Length: 168
View 1 (cartoon, rainbow, N blue to C red):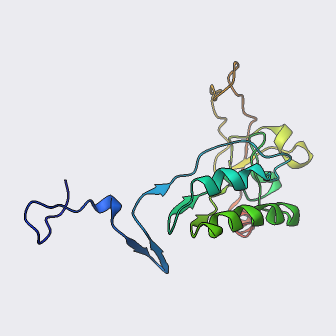
View 2 (view 1 turned 45 degrees about the vertical axis):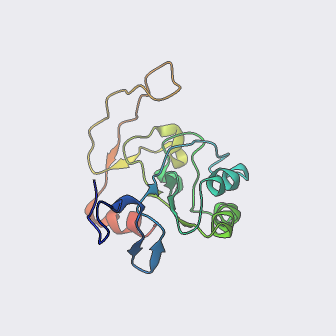
């Protein structure tokens, strides 16, 4: 199950051993992965997120936030947090502070949904951008009775790629 150590019949459990990840010294190798919560309002993280994330933070643990959209055009789902406006960045600060208060680490999972969007989530009702112009097939999503339908995307031009990258 693990590596044999000096003492007879004792084993270490690699998942529970410390790990150095760049400049971060984690207390173990378990990471809280990103999960879609969809509890933001107008793409602004809410104060209850500080409670949610801090309840899961302990000394030198790593938490990766829920998917956080990088721009207005990156949206595709209702009630997901963003990080492109000053108001959103300010709303994330108490969340980050709450995790740091428990000596935890928190990374933001940045997100652009690409073609998994609709005209209603796009600025001025434009087509979602993607690497392809192929439309996604309707998909049943959590807590939905009807399958989600996606708008036909506009294929991103090569010269537009740096614009999206720079939104990060």
